[in-house]
Length: 138
Image (cartoon, rainbow, N blue to C red):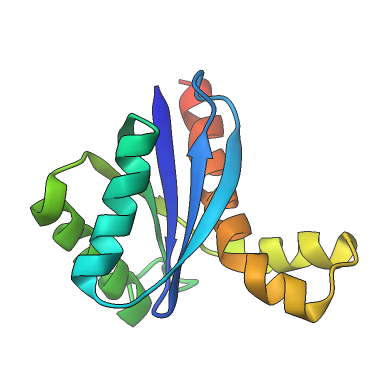
C-alpha cells in the first residue's frame, strides 16, 4: 500500500511517497503551483502513478493547536482534490516540519539555493514519515 504525503504551500507543493510496505517515506518532487485545476492534475498523476491508497496532507496549525489561514488553505485545497478525483485524505499536524527540514539540510551543509529547492519535498517526507511511524505503532 503506497501513501502520498503532501506539504501544501501557496507557491509549491512538496510530495513524498511511501515504500510499498508503508515503512519509509521518500521525497519525490516539488510541484510549482499554477492554478487549482493544474495542481490537482499533478497530484492525481502522482497518486495514479504510485497506485496510492491514501494522501496524508500536512495541516499547518498554530503553536496553540488552532488552525490559522495556512491550515484553512490546506483544507480548502484538499477539499478540491476530493472533488477532483475523490482519494482518501488524512491530515497530519505539520507544526515544525519545515523547521526540521531546514535544520536537516543545514546539518547536511547544503547551500541556501539547494535548501530553497528541496525544503518542501523534505517537509513532505517528514509529514509522511511521522504518519507512517504512528500507524506502525497501532
